[in-house]
Length: 248
Image (tube, rainbow, N blue to C red; front, side, top):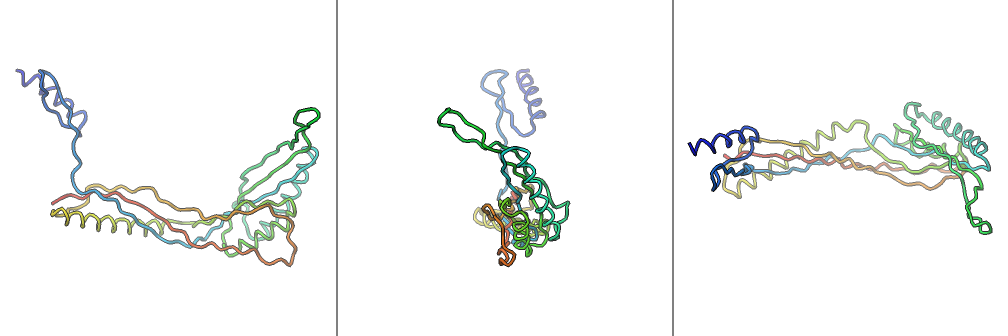
């Protein structure tokens, strides 16, 4: 009867938790929960793939200042219309142009005599992101935008990526699994045991680092100026997997 009294709640705990052990404690009715140990050989594999970027993401726009909001807005609107037209004239589709930020802020200065901030004008900023699908034309696009927007032009940065990273993920994933198997084989050999089949596989986060170049405020660019040199370089795509192998 005593054994039955502690066995029944122990069975309930096992059915509810599934991954723990249950034994009788020192006192009647006392139950001790024991965590179940992970078994097998657990390893983490690392894989990578090199990709040549085929997309350039250009962050650009205009900034205008005026004594009134209306004056600043008119200047900004006219300059932005020219910038947008320059993008379209250089093969950038409208669907690949997205507004990133639009803001209107007062320009202030400290009035020493009256000991307070006073508004001296207003600043209007309109920034967009343009997707350039021909990376070798990125420099020409930047030059065209700077020429169109003149002193109102602002080019923040340019970054590079790949339009379809799937093939590179697959390459890195294959590399990661091979790396995991090599590590597991070495561990099994060192431990003097046989390596069985994988019993658990989990993919970690994929890391696709952005490559970017920062720019300063751009002014008017003369027509005969040389094309701005832009080099996309390469991207290293990394991926990790965690694999558990059975011991045989």
